[in-house]
Image (cartoon, rainbow, N blue to C red; front, side):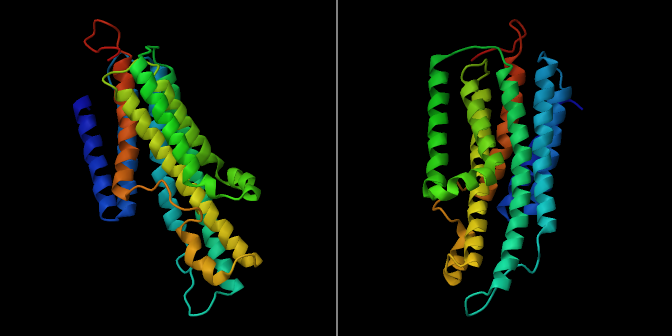
Length: 293
């Protein structure tokens, strides 16, 4: 398959994933995203070019893990308990709350698994960025460091400022894959400013990967807080009628939320820009592919 056709197939499947997310066809969007990432992995591993094999395999392995994330999410949808919920004019009893808690815990486990797979993907792509030749440009270094600081501050202000101190350690234990994925994404963004690049493709890709990881962390933390609120209601520390109306909407204020279509576009564009940028930035002088720019 010619490389132009590989990018065309990736573009078509990616556009279908975004379009499906726009109309809330979640399962179709996830399937298309998985296919798009497999195509991107093929581009990274088998495409012609001067990039070292180790960088190609890091990129390809990262894209394969990115393809596995929507598959995990599809499994979570299939495993979702259809009758888990509560409706009534009075406060829910312990039986209803227990059913809600069990369903929420299962969903949280799936979400944590997806975040763990995404963590592996982000680490591999960050490793590919680290393997690029050094080419420090002051403007790019400043831009990436400022972006990393802003994103890190947004992560802290998003969910963590509203968490009680006695719940902080359990929260970290409950959402560690998301936190580490966000940290790896921020590290990749900082590294991108100190490595060879081609028309800022590596920086742009690293920035989008970091944003997607931060959103994953935010969603996972919100889910953990909702489960904790449900557990509090069962233990009698929260009024059930108040808890049920608020727990599933997020327990710590606003979140790093993106429109589903925009989230799908960010998830796909970040790795794609990184693949294109890393492969171009490793071209030696005299091949028509500038190392830095």
